[in-house]
Length: 187
Image: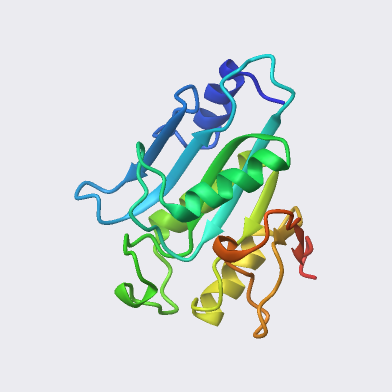
């Protein structure tokens, strides 16, 4: 488990200087706030809490949740992380464009290098990474992302859709538990 001072070291070491996990909530946007690259929430504020670690959920695209207001997906992911005993929630997405509907983004096989770098960096400090982008992602992009994210660790999901994609967390049962989506080293 990392303490507050360890967070700063890890974040500087891995290039996440825009994220300050000493604050209970925050987000990293581009200048016009049309792209969100990272969002975080501290789940418990009690330093004596038995919770520990960081869980990263990777969705399809960010909705309207920001550093102050969690949208319904962030709220749902907070519930899962809390029930599993994690102390911090990190949120990332395959696509960085903020939109309340997947139809509002360009679902293509294009990698946004800034966004992808943030995903990889958050993955380094996460104790558990959950693929949660649902069935609307470009198969080539989701395959490349899952391969990169599972390079040295298992990538989990909350179940699979009929097409093999990871289920989106919003409408899943509260007692859903993570299962391996892609095992480490090219499974």
